[in-house]
Length: 236
Length: 397
Ligand SMILES: Nc1ncnc2c1ncn2[C@@H]1O[C@H](COP(=O)(O)OP(=O)(O)OP(=O)(O)O)[C@@H](O)[C@H]1O
Ligand SMILES: [Mg+2]
Image 1 (spheres, helix red, strand yellow):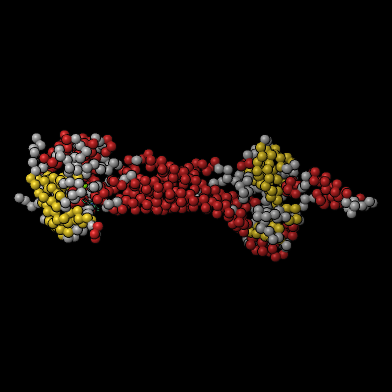
Image 2 (image 1 turned 180 degrees about the horizontal axis):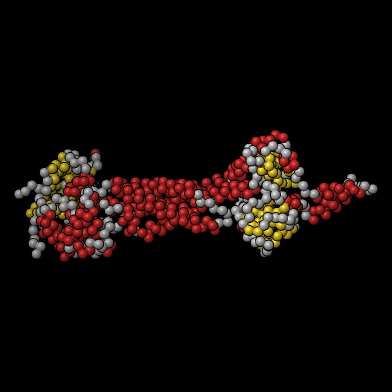
């Protein structure tokens, strides 16, 4: 198999210090490959969000190693200086709620990322339209966020996550508020995009409706991950 | 790159503009206050210029008729006339009084002057100068009097024969010019009842009303009712003469106080208007503080409503600088729009004020500077809050 898009080795995250410290991650090993969608599941308080925040470089792990492509980005300390640029260029975020910027239209919500990465407005908007097209919302490109349906907002937010073609996409309970038909549509989209954009997509979820669709699952319990094969139920 | 501030403002344009209008009216009030003060000093200067005096001679040990009572004998001018550098002298009385005009009372400053001498009104916008020595008047247009109309000052009626413009007292009352004799009568003469009373008292006084010496009673009575006082003597100096020197001479040789018109201006502006200035200064300070508070509050609530978006913006890699710039620009935008609205409204409502409101360009520039600084200060609250937002908050629990 090819080189993993992201690899974690014995990743530890402790909150606080001394006797009151909480060790949320106790040595997590994980490898996710380009083009695959893996599930990250586990009971409440098991450390899913903590792991996602470490992967997203928004909190600093306490120890261990994180390798992004062939670059070690964390080895008992950050190995990259500009975490902001790392998040912007190499990680896509999809949230439970779309969290779009209400004062920008659909296109600019997506185009903002390439713009922040230094692309020209024209180039960024062309990229945004392309990704919105891939998500079948190109016809709503000029709409204000408040004018979009919930499903459309979710797609625009997925488009935003993919706008800089990041090798890794982190999705935090992306289907929680959706009914099962819509939830499966989102998973279908994520699978297609993983293939089209060669992205490694990690989906944190509780959602029983979509868990059977993963081919590979990391189950996290008490701060440690166990890799399991998923059912890989076909999405017609 | 998209300008986030412009987009955010455009998104909530109604609230933004409403805030700017509110702020603008406040700035308008502030500018007007400053304009009122400027108008006061300008009125004082216009008044001094209107009298045409280079040197003011007033009662010894006083600051002149506008600061305290100043009474001179109306012969004092004779001894001043001969001093070197003196071109012309004129007696003047100043009386602020109510003038009966039809059904209403108008508050005016009556200047009693001698025709052809300093104190006579200069440029007339309409009508003619006073030619008769009694019962004619020149009035400022601001009194509302019209040519040919008759107005009552104290006991006498006067015909308005000429009109001036921008001649107001240091207190902003429009001026009226009447012949000195009439003015002395109006200012110093007792009313009939008082005269009758005094006469009766004199007649009852055996030391004055002596049997067999009838002239004494009459002479004393005449002295009592005579009016030989003026408030100031106005001096115009000869071309090339130094008013300060002339004033110094008068002070040295005559038992009189003399001020150059510059010193008189200082007395008017410095002592009489100074308290108003401090009052207005305090108002300005409070208004500036209120403006800062309003902008700060509105920027704070605007930022508060965007914290989730700011967390997302940070998470996806927006620089702190970009977010701070957005908030700062929104605050400055409020200031710029507010200032424009304020300046325009001050210009529009300025003429409605009873006193002259003088909006100086340098005051506006200063006001603009203060507004901008206030907006920067106000934005700091919002910026501080935005910079504290943790991008991890976007991910939630
Ligand atoms: N900022 C923090 N400070 C201290 N402890 C924390 C913090 N965030 C999380 N924890 C603790 O770390 C552990 C893992 O939390 P985490 O949020 O990762 O769980 P989770 O799997 O996302 O749970 P849920 O499914 O309920 O969202 C929990 O015991 C939690 O109390
Ligand atoms: Mg969680």
